Image: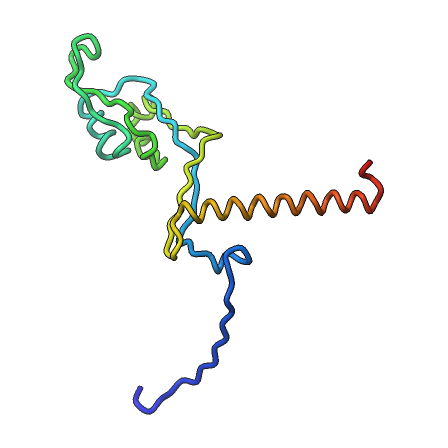
Length: 155
């Protein structure tokens, strides 16, 4: 307001991401397990449209049925991009889809994402982070070996 003022005393400390995460030039870094999407039973026509467009967009594609695939059906859903799965499981509200679709995660396949807001590119950030992690692991091993030597257990 007119006539008011603020007194401010600020102290800054320069640091790097190696010292603490607050100095990291990363906006968001995250990981998730790779989704595995399977169709246990065929999904046809309107149900296929709903699955592909409403429940799991980008994961399924609706294709035309050939004569031996789906007798009496025009189109069916096929899995095209499990990476796009958000694991929402909204399809489970429909009993037919609940029985037809199985979504799990691949336990040893990670999707890692880095968003950069600083001067470094995401690939450089990942390489540097791995270098630092490797160095810290070597330090832990070295300290454990030294501790065992002091106690006379490392023979």
